[in-house]
Length: 213
Image 1 (cartoon, rainbow, N blue to C red):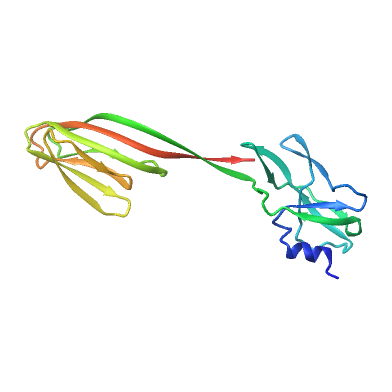
Image 2 (image 1 turned 180 degrees about the vertical axis):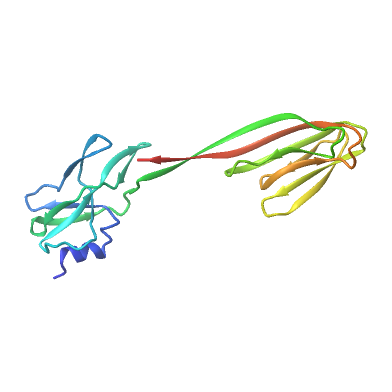
């Protein structure tokens, strides 16, 4: 006959929550305190370390936590010992959500409009530089509308180290997908006179938040 502990190890009871039914007719429960709040649980995982007493199981109670209308189970620092001959049966809960930390993703959209200027005495200005690691999409419209140059150049540097140069003709809007871009610069061929224009940016991003249960 397979030992109860060995059977539980084979069933990954050190990772998957179990319910234990006792011969007295009730379910094994444990009480504890988590973040200064008392809790009662009937969910356990097996402590995989060897027991000095082969007649007992060492179990870790799991703390039930309500999160977004779900019940999640988190680990505790509590250990309880149960005699094997008191256990009538077990129930595995393979679909239970076991987690100590939840990663939340909050998606948002925004739009930014403004002006850019390459002053006299300068040949370049930076219109946009990425500081968002979670950017999903980013669309940029550029319009060159003031200056004596026939055209300016928009230079887009990308995350993979490449860059593209686009001609920005006067009073002709240009749309750029810079979702994988690092920066956008406006360049004029010489620094003798000022050149300016407008930009409009629509982007979508994620705010990532780590919640400790």
